[in-house]
Structures are given as structure tokens and as C-alpha cells.
Length: 172
Length: 318
Image (cartoon, rainbow over all chains, first blue to last red):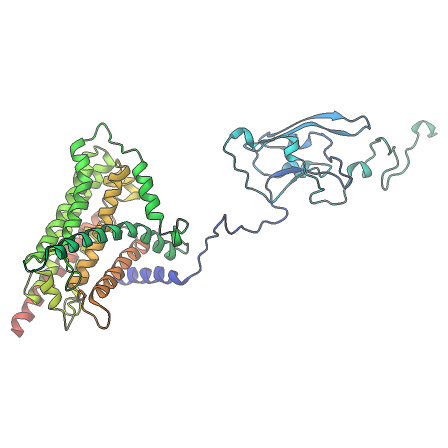
């Protein structure tokens, strides 16, 4: 009995010469992968236009229902959110909104330091979420690959898109 | 007295301030050492190497609400934490730290220390009783039962040393170890006293009165603010006192080559304190009945046999 106690004391003592496992966080930051699921952003396409088309798929996918947005339409035919609001005090950083997004607009970033003294400050509006870059997908531009007509790009003019067919001209 | 009054005063205040400061610093030192033994740095952010953590904790404790539960026995509740600190500080008076340092030179110094450390247990029992809380009462009960079981062999384990040096005076005991430390002939006594000392200072593995996992905080569950702080300083003072006593009684006190006596004394004491902390870091707490059984069925007979053999050898050689 005594021998085993002495042995465990010796084992513990040997740890004096081991390296600490502690990461001294505010001084030493851990490496976060680019695809880490942290603070959510809204990105722009390479031309600097908003990618979000206010399709609401992210709001539907969101398990804690923390995303709320309202669609509006620009005179040129583009859809975009009138407001886009994420309540980060509810957000669980699951990334399902990013998966659901058809336009790569909503993305998660490797940033988790979002403490606030006031709970209301955890509610991010569109101007807080929107960044000036394309995020993880540099070249993607929804309106350049989609069949939606906007001013300056009619149907059939998108990349790899065939010209539209007049159905009534088909003699079947 | 032939020594001038200012030397006596210097001794008194030097020992008092040094022990209180050491006990306070030990709260940081223990957490730091525990940290190293658990592969983490421990408190290292306040001041250089975290040394000002002590100050930060003190400020925090002073500004905490000093809560006295209305169901408590108030006079006893207030008195209890002062007892442990006072008795431990008084006990330091007879510990000779070096040939010139030491407050009093009592001819019954050893008995005095034992008496004072026994009175300190009242602090635990009274604190547990006065809190009027079930956890605290259980802690107090355990303290009482633990005291009964280890005080006996604690005293007996030291009788071998007393017989060999022929004195209860701690200074004489140290002087008797000039050639040979008592740990050699009295190894069993050393072990028994060390184990009793752990129980006396209520440190893991014998921290049953406190037992955070079963009794929340045991006897000091209801204490907060500086009263809680006094219990803690008392516990650390007890650790230092027991270490200083072991140094004095078994490890030759200030005797040692090359270095000045006070350095030797502090070094030996510091190593013993570190062993106390290592014990806390590595050993689990025994069950309550196991502790009692261990005390009465192993330690007491061991102390008695040690006493008998020492007496026999002394008579044989005399």
C-alpha cells in the first residue's frame, strides 16, 4: 500500500519536468482552420455587389431560428435583403446556414471573440454582417451563372447558359 | 535577560511578520506547484510569475461580504477562525530558527507546540458547530474524531526524540543533532509524526473535515470574506509549523554544512512544505473509517513499538 502511494507521488513529481499543456489564450492564440465555424458574415461577389438574394433558405435551415431577413427587389431586377439580422446570442455556430445558402453569400469565419456587455449588442444587422470581399469563394458571382434576368444581362447570357427557347415555336 | 530589548522585539515581529507573509505567499506557491505537477502553469498573470496573486486574493477577500448566517451561534462563529490563526502563530514562538532567531526558549517547548496545535482543532470543531449547518457539523464531527485518533500517536512518536535528546526544549533537541540527525535512529518516529502532522494541519489526504467533494467545504461552508481567509491562513500556518517542527525534531534544525544556519532551516522547511503539496497533488482521500482504522491499528502500535525499542536501546547503551 505504502509503495503504491510513494509510486504515485513520484509519478506526479515527474510532471514537474513536463511541458505545460496550457495555451495561454489571450497571449497565445490557437490556430483556427479557414473553415472554422465562427462569426457569420455576408459576402459580396467579385464586382462588389451583395451576394445575398434573400431566398430565406438560411433562416429556414437555422435550428435556433436566429436569422431574420426581408426580401426587397432592386430596379435592375436583383433581389437583396432589405434587412438581414442575426441574433448571435442565439446562434449555435452550426454552419447549416452556410450549407443552405445557394449563392455563397452567408459564410462562417474563424473568429469567435464576440463578447459584449450588453445583450442587445449581440444582434448583428446587415451593415455589421456585410464585408467588402468575396470570403472563401473568390470568383463566384450568382447573377453571372444563374438564369435570372437583370439589367445588363438578359436570359441566356450567363456563363454556360444556352439561349432561351420559345416553347410555342416547338412543333411537337 | 541579558539580550537587549530591541533584539527580542525584532525577533518577535520578525518571526510574526515572516510567518504570516510566508503563509500568504504559500497560497500562491501551492497553486503554482500544483499547477506544475498537473502540467499547467497555475496563477501566473498578476505581477511577475503571478506573485501578486496573493495581493489580489487579499483585496478580493476584504471586499467580500462578511456574511454571518442568522441561524449561526454568532459569538462562537466569529471567534472560531481567530483561534486557529492565533494558536498557530503562538506555536511559532518556540520554534528555534537559527542560533540567534527564535522568540522564546521554553524548557517545555515541544509540549507547548503540541498543546497549541491541539487547541487549533477547537477552531474547526467550534466553526463547524457554530455554523449550524449540516455540512459544517459533519466536518466538525470528523475533525473531533480525527483529533482523537491522531493526537495520541502524534505525541508518542515524538517521545523517542525527547528520550534521545533528554529534553523538551526545542533548542536542546536541535543541539543534540549536531553530529547525527534524529531521522536516522528515529525513522519510524519521523514517518509517524509526518503522517500525524498532515492530519493535524488537515491537509489532503487527511482533509476529511473539509472534504470538498462530500461536504462542500466542511467546517467552513458558511464562512466568507476574511474569516474564511483566516481559516486558510491558519491551515497554511499549520503546514509551515509542522514542516518547521519536523525540521527541528528530525532533520537537524539549522545544522548543515557551508550555508548559514537560517538558510538551512528555511531550505529544509521549504522542501517539507513542497512534500506536503506533493501529497495533496497525488494522493486521494481515504474513507473516514479507513482513516480511524489506520490511526488506531497501524500508527499507534508503530509509535508504541518505536518508543519501546528506543527506550530499550537507550537503556542498553547507557
